[in-house]
Picture 1 (cartoon, rainbow, N blue to C red):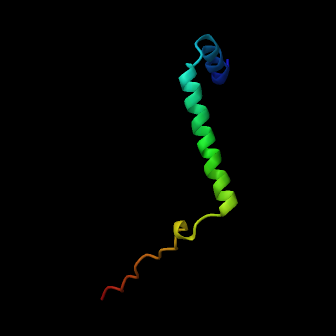
Picture 2: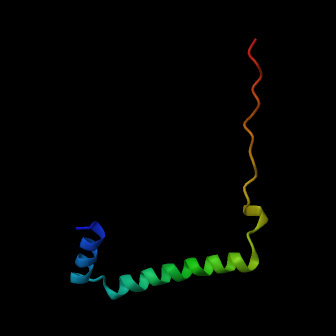
Picture 3: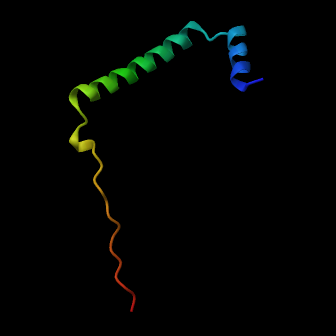
Length: 61
């Protein structure tokens, strides 16, 4: 049997508590709010990584 089917059966037999469900929904809502704000206002320039070049090495004599 598929592992996900076994997990689904166990979840049906012993469902998560109401607080756990609310916690998961709050986390998903926070992620969607952050994503929506990023889409609406754009990504801030100060968070964009700059290309970093490794230091140039001098040839050994």
